[in-house]
Figure (tube, rainbow, N blue to C red):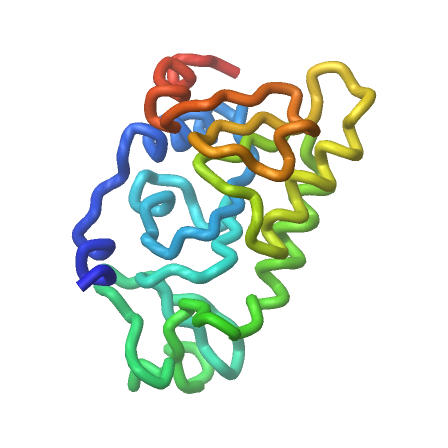
Length: 186
């Protein structure tokens, strides 16, 4: 089962590098479409993440919106996990977003706020084709088109629709491309 494999997965080299860059103050925010929880497992706090498609380890109160991080996979049929909010007693739902479901508006709002405040977007291993996430790097690239050292960096094996907008395009494996970045200091 894919979800159980995700539950047992550990952060890889790229997750560890991103965590070190965040800890050193060089990385402000991660916008992710992954649901595997590996950014949080690596030590990046929820406040520095916009998990657009949710996280298999997070339940959200359907009444007050409070998140509860768990050590187990919360994905279940129907969405409601059978547990109740410790604050308001409301029903808890897994935070995973299914195909055809709307993305949580608060998460999208935060992701856009972080995008608008950013000088640089580094798109790692993304086709940059799934909306609304794909709109964020292209918007940032266009905003900083004439700014030196600001804009979009892409690391991916396949071409993306944003390649022509990027300051730097690395055709390769993400783990190999970010090797050494974790030694940068703020």
